[in-house]
Image (cartoon, rainbow, N blue to C red; front, top):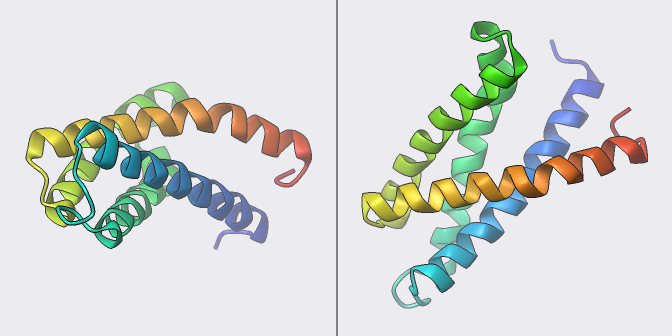
Length: 130
């Protein structure tokens, strides 16, 4: 059973991931794909962003370490599998073309990594998860 510390760290980072990737998804859909509210309502983008992250993030934390011990290799393999899975989720929920769903997933995950690494360092330095 996870300790309260692990649960707090997990849910902190899950929340950050959901926020970053969902904001990015809104930006991709509205700015890059040029889909307006009539073509794709905000509620579907919100549901898609939250569902994609919520469905895949636990895999990275709890399942992948069982199969891949090396941290770097685990994250490379996991991110690829996560992007593929999230592409299908976005394709199904947002009804985007599959190519657009893949592109959206890649952009969301890359943004999450770029924003997440310094943000995680800040959170750890702040003492919240220590």
